[in-house]
Image (cartoon, rainbow, N blue to C red; front, top):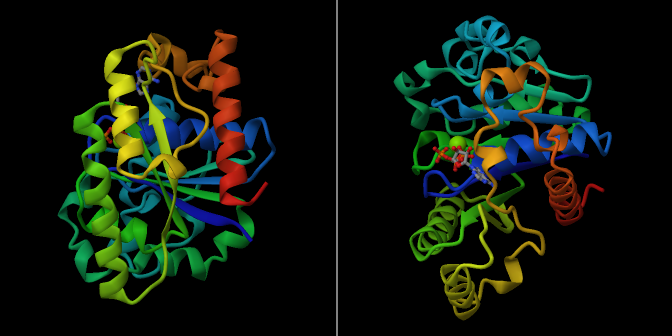
Length: 265
Ligand SMILES: Nc1ncnc2c1ncn2[C@@H]1O[C@H](COP(=O)(O)OP(=O)(O)OP(=O)(O)O)[C@@H](O)[C@H]1O
Ligand SMILES: [Mg+2]
């Protein structure tokens, strides 16, 4: 039985999308897992990260995206785009912003259940937007657990207790016992900086050390340049395919720690 994991942080730009896409791709391509990535952010960053321009043109029809869940009562498996044999995507659509998601907080969970997606996929990853909203509620209520990617600055980790409160309150309000915290993954890490050491110390003082992933995602220019169209043509936007072997090895280690923590591998 597969697991659903939301990538969530109330701070923007902390590499939620980068980690969701690259962990998903690596689990599929390196570890032969079946992975579905659901882009639950109307910014559609994960969709744009993964797909080439002509594929984006195809999926940008509302009926081929997450939007179909709300526009039509009967969204079917057509919204799942098979990017590779094992790495599939439910794209987002900008018009999601016009949907009253609060009226249907369980719509995505119902869809996952109806099509038995946890039997089809080993991992279902949901990329969330940064603000608590109908999208994050939709994602959290579909998930078994949630991963919090965070950059290593006091401003970024400030959001962690707030996020935990949001999840706690949601579970209480909806009387559900999921999602549980999978862990905190430090991103865009520059270990030589004082701010890294100071923030790490703060995380310890706040009692979060036990949730920290052993592996961290280092800050590297190649990663921020990844979504350039030229890179996408040859699949080089994915860390696993980048020339720098250190980046390849890092995403493999992060992905396998992720799989171990989720308990699927
Ligand atoms: N390890 C890294 N090294 C350098 N740049 C990175 C790294 N990870 C992510 N970035 C860059 O940081 C920016 C934000 O990353 P990303 O879009 O993944 O964050 P996000 O948390 O999903 O943002 P949002 O809150 O807008 O959804 C992007 O430009 C991305 O390319
Ligand atoms: Mg994002």
